[in-house]
Length: 236
Image (cartoon, rainbow, N blue to C red; front, side, top):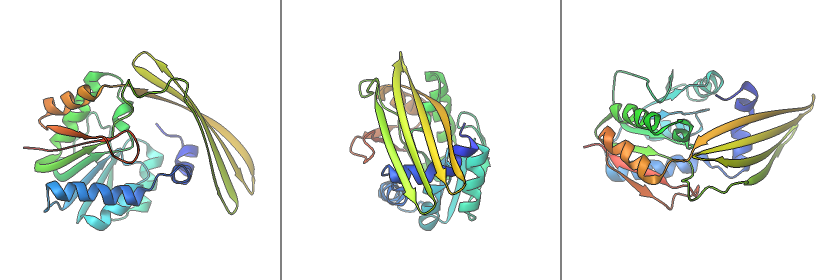
């Protein structure tokens, strides 16, 4: 779960790393409308700070989010007043209604620890999807793609603030472990903090099988700009 410190700089540092939330939301909207032109409602699961949700609110009449982290949820609620952002775990939440589109972005499914948890999460997503609705999910790296020992460095800067991000990732069987160190320089001084993130290295077939068992046949789009690809499907 994201800390308060991380939530405060999340959008800032990831925008500097090239993540364009509005462009991604526009692209996903096109994919949804190609498959369900009349889609009018959308649920963003693990919506984070609401960066995608803010743009989706311009495209869909009804938008909602689900987020486990209290800090991220508060940020999303402030950012998108039109959306109700629910507290919930993607493995087991229940909203009591369905949506024309359900998505789970930012490789959030990679946070599930086992194939069984992945299947439970897929079932929860599909349960909230209306018949004929579109499901979109962004995976973490597949085992054959993951680069053991990978390092990255990023810097974001604006008037009165600079943030650096250094990360190092290692493989531990079917798990990837990432150490991320942040340095935040502001007019009041410099502070540092470190976060440790763990993602499961599921295979493409394990993702597809989880969605299939949940009742939604998915296809994998390998050319999604982030390099990890995108799963998309329509519930029968």
